[in-house]
Amino acid sequence: MQPTSPIGVFDSGVGGLTVAAAISEYLPNEQIIYFGDTEHLPYGDKSEEAIQQYALKISDFLLQRNCKMIVIACNTASSVAYQLVQKYFGSEALIINVIDPVAEAVAANAQQKVGVMATRRTVQTGIYPQKISHLRPDLHIVAKAARSLATMIEEGLFHNKKIMAAIIEHYLADPDFADIDSLILGCTHYPIIAKDIHQYWQQNAIQPIQIFDSTDTVAVRVKQLLTTHQLLNSSKETPNYQCFISDYTQSFEQASQIFFKQKIKPQHFDLWGS
Ligand code: DGL
Image 1 (cartoon, rainbow, N blue to C red):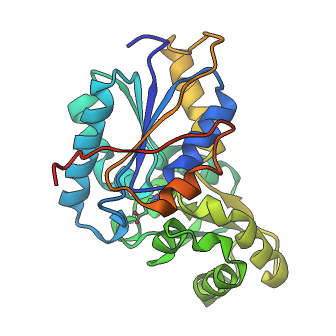
Image 2 (image 1 turned 120 degrees about the vertical axis):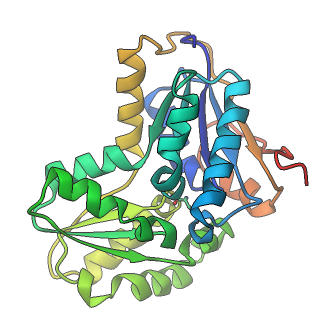
């Protein structure tokens, strides 16, 4: 592991780019290699075993490219595969999941009731309620699966404000969410529609809420960890971001352009030999 080595970031699709973009803003000297497993999206509907296999193989791919750190920029993979990735590769690179930093931020700031919106798999694991209750047993936490939302965002429907407003209402108008003071966007695809979600709450909420997601919070954690291990890249060269996808989709290519200041060209990489 060298300070000049890249940071590897992965997700099932474009969602993890929200985390990669936050890292690039916060740590502009760092090289980033991104892997979007578009062939297997949505992870949220896959079995734990399948997601674990994907996460291990992608982590291995990133390590072969000499990454000093692997950011599991997917809540679903973080919830079922983080420990395994840590076990297999923790001696070769620093491993970060996107759930712990958010759970800690929520525990430090929420008042009484927290809503979690995430994929079906993430909700089924109960990981957010477990982690937050461990830190703040007094908080009441309600978690809801927003099943098709990540796929809709991946397909580029986030540009269609009408459709997004309708789907956000469909998930957030749940009576269990009516009196929350904090909302966790527990899927890395959701920050892409954070503005629409804010707008929904401004128009409909009884009380103002705080929204937590895994963009800046995770970027701060990345910096802390690299600093502790003396692995921050101090080179002043403009980084050259690389982006790989397991299946070429036009929607990924289009969506990926909104994240970075420099243009990136996603390359198809046949990781699964199909
Ligand atoms: N972006 C991913 C997450 O944070 C999952 C989306 C999916 O593939 O279902 O959970």
